[in-house]
Image 1: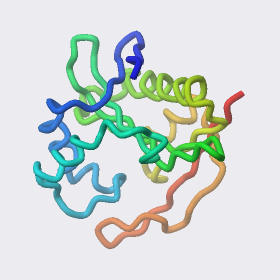
Image 2: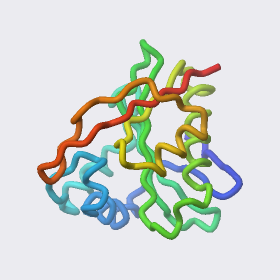
Image 3: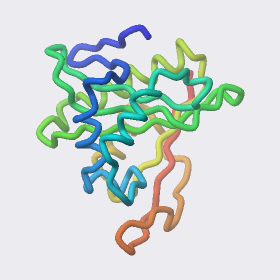
Image 4: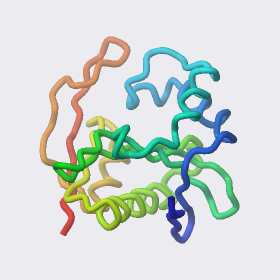
Length: 174
């Protein structure tokens, strides 16, 4: 895959060296609310995932890329999910593990790089994101990047016996 480079960061495919980082993210209970995870992942299970991460997006309908600084520091992950080539759409999600690295334009750059790739290389017509209603910083970020709120899914996500609304945002390729 061609490396996707921006001013601050680049996106790259998962590699075997990402096992420990993947282990940290997938087992961070603060991320579970948005990822739908309810149990920890073992390194063995994550290794199996890494062993299959090379599979084509047209086959597995998803793609996970690593967000890195130009100094090769791993910051987070950005995902494509529910890839629908026939309907020319996909969902995207992002997580930056280190809270000190948030609100510095890294997420905006990663989303822009990925969205451009999806439009220009894969020919998608639209990209969408599902964001919890109380995740104001993510909602602000996606809206700033041209995503529009197209709906609210009431009581959509249950986490720790609480139901939360999820906002559906969409960006049409112009």
